[in-house]
Length: 216
Image (tube, rainbow, N blue to C red; front, side, top):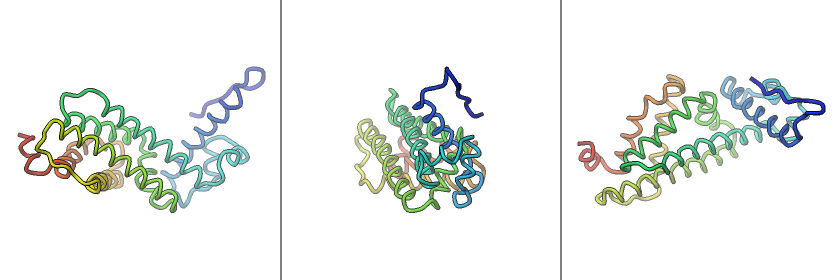
């Protein structure tokens, strides 16, 4: 439901109005892209859903692409911050921390199906700038996996050190699982992938032999 701002004597300050309008436009972009596909979305779709004028849209965004990139950035920043927060919380061991991070990631995506589709699928066809943004995000996910791996090595010295490319490979593997699930089953049931993703983490970040010993 769109927020209604007061008018007249008690009107909200201009900065608040702009931020509220911006948030509505970003949400409208995500919803439109998830429903119609990035290529089929026009500025008209966004302003209609957001309840703003075309003039208001172009006061904040140069075009559809800029609005989509802003929506993508806002969504992934929130997602990554939630995972960072989960990793910062005290846990009895690294595996518990890893599970918590996976659970937060999947729950966040499940709670925002439109963003999940825009972030995982539609971004791939949104142009070179979107792909560059996605690459940066993949690196940030890889950094989070590297932090989990450092925690694992502190707990279990036998775990070998890894090259940065391994963390990117793990991010790619998880991305494939999550994307396939969204396409086949939808985002709301993503938490069912928790164990499968942890298995990928154990296999790639720890190694099958050592992972088997940990599991037992």
